[in-house]
Length: 304
Image (cartoon, rainbow, N blue to C red; front, side, top):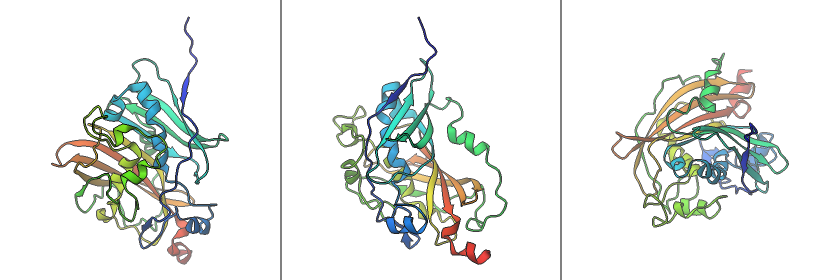
């Protein structure tokens, strides 16, 4: 007997840690600082969205094995903020045998949705959640904070990056990989022990790929007006020829691929391609929707 019932995997409830309280950019505190968050109308500084990505690898490894760490993609739309002390659980629908895409999501303990996402493996799984969301974007009517940006604008330079275990990742990410591993919601010896890793080297956790790809983003030189406070609204991380390794050199190249606005935000979507040290072989990429809060920029009041 067979059934058409969709079944899901669920992880345990976890309490993610806030590690960006001291984050700085553009010469001011970020939305992750409690006092800044309160000024903007939020009850506390939210935990950064990709922190929740660490909840998913145990579920996706169960579905696709270690291939997930080599050619996996998570494509996420963030729905509700989480503050320190709240519990979060990850879910993943079990796909049919041979399927290369499924639906995943995260919820707080009370059922409040945190994020919705697609998860997939390989290049031919079909449109990801964010590819579908980008296709539905309408051109912005008039931008102020982002008026000097345009689709197709590329980063000013190739960015040469790496992540060593004890490397402080800078003002945007004021911690090291080892400090993150001491607080990460789902740990694995693969993240720190080369002998335990199937690839013979420690691999960078999914949420820390976001740090690798974003910590040097100032070098892109995108002319965003400020000071203004932003947040991650949508984010996709795709492994093409992974995993990414601790202590390995990489080259980043950025391009603005979409602009949008809502009542509260102006947004620019950046695709960051991650190459090996030679700059010739692409190994991963990140798509990130930076949503800038209009009311955090003094120019909006002046314009009104």
